Image (tube, rainbow, N blue to C red; front, side, top):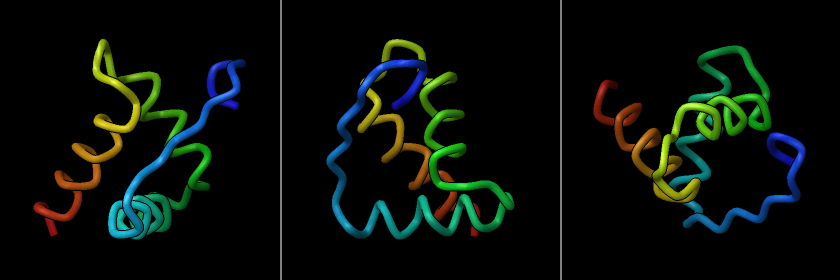
Amino acid sequence: MLAGHATSLALEPEFWSVLEAMAKSGSVSLAALLADIDETRGERPLASACRVAALGFAHSR
């Protein structure tokens, strides 16, 4: 559930791995990280927003 809506999110395992690392580095749960990405994604689809966030995190490391 994100923002009160049932949500399904399909990503490649490599992106899930980076998102989990992002959550760990921010000391938040994966669910909290996804909620934050969801709140700030604008018109971009959630899966795309997650991939872009993961790429940005990986690039910054």
